[in-house]
Each structure stands twice: as C-alpha cells, then as structure tokens.
Image (cartoon, rainbow, N blue to C red):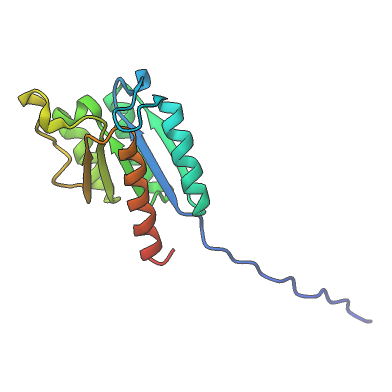
Length: 165
C-alpha cells in the first residue's frame, strides 16, 4: 500500500495587526465647526477618515468610538484591554474635568494613551483647566484643533514602530 503525501503548505505567519482606538467624549458628535488651525469646516467623520487613512498607510487598524455616556466610554476602554488594542487617543471632552471613573478604567487596562483637546483647556474657564487624565497620559495635545488628533496619531504610530511591531 502506498501512502500519498501532501506537500507541506507554506506557512505564512504574519504579525497581528496593531490597533489604535480613538475615543471621543460627550458632544463631540456635534462637531461641525471651522477648525481654528486649518480653517476647514470639519465633522467628527472627517477627523476619523483622515486618521484612518493615515493609520492604514502604516498597516495599523484604527477604530473610533464616540459616546455622550460615561459608562459606554468606560465599557469601551475595558473592552480594549482584552481586544489587543495597542494605543488609545482620547478626547474626554467634558469628562476631562469630572470623570475619575474613566481615568480609573484607563489606568486599569494600562494601554498607553494621548489626551487630545480641540481647544486650549488652559485658556478656558478655571473649572475646565484641570484634567483627571493628563498625569496618566503619555502626552497631552491641547488647543491645536483637529490637527491635534493627527499629531497624537503620528506619536502613536511612532511608538508602535519603536516597539518592534
């Protein structure tokens, strides 16, 4: 009896795709204003499209999530911890000044993050000048409009490249 053997299939082991999660806090779904830096009329979808295109060029998967509800943002951060998300870009918006719970979720999952604000929070009302996130973030970008998101993404991509991915 002869035994047929199959040629061994070439193994194509690829590295898992790196992932960046972009979180947008309350009221950012209403973003439809003239960006102070570029002068362009921008929506949150425009911001996402530009970021996604840039991430894809580096072979990185980008997901954006916006919610007006603190618990949904916390749930999304917690899920990121088990989904293999490598980096978070977050604009906590109004939760910047109030959410210890969202801060705790970010600390618990231990995913590096950059905090982004469209406006310069230090030039706003005194109660908006304190952030519950800045001391835990690897970086903070404030006051550069939508360009701040792009700069945060560039930083995240550089960190992912440097980590050998």
